[in-house]
Image (cartoon, rainbow, N blue to C red; front, side, top):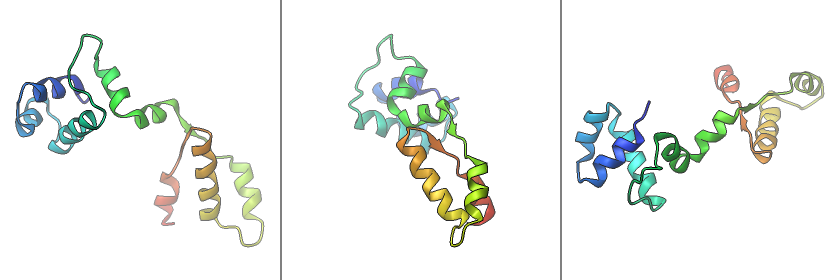
Length: 117
């Protein structure tokens, strides 16, 4: 688990990103990403209310969408549509992704990557 609070605490105390990386056991890229997000969002100090969960939700809101769940594909619809002429799995996936994002859900994507599409 990423220690967001500890990363920011050390950073605000002037510790280098390399030392922070070693101290918290996260990669330098992760530490850099947390610090960049904090700068971008104007996060300048830690308060008692700033828990790891709160900081993660504040800095990485897209991760919260993942925790809310993926939009499950409607496999019956997919099978019916694939019977039609000029309909491809890739086309159906693009449409599914757009519908999912418009509804505030995260589309599943692993299946098509593994299928080589």
